[in-house]
Image (cartoon, rainbow, N blue to C red; front, side, top):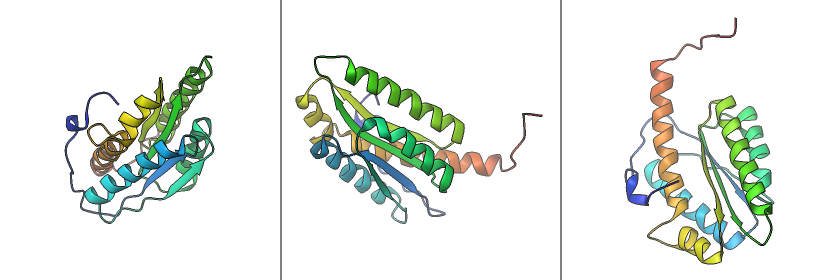
Length: 170
């Protein structure tokens, strides 16, 4: 996500039916991802105190999309947060993994019509990871929580405004 935390509304309060916001997070670079999970969960529960926030852990960023696909297919999730950290090395592996993950998450979101907040971060080094995951000024976990609340509100309005499913295939 571009911009700083202040670019999103601060602490909207979503009142209404209980929402489910699933967090799918990698265990790779655990110290950074754990901090993102904590900040995202804190933001979600401050904004949606009655939310259900299940956590699904996967080994690495590459496994996040298949878990997201399963969750969108087999649960009634309202929004998914995808959290992970990929740090560049001397080869193109990190770029290839990140590109694949980004494309797959977008495909899952479009196909399922479930918003996926993609905070699988591609970073140059651990210093950048510390700034974005452990910091209070810029924290991608907090921003992900804010974006999830905004998308839950938007999709609630969309479903209320357009309750009937129209089959456009035939």
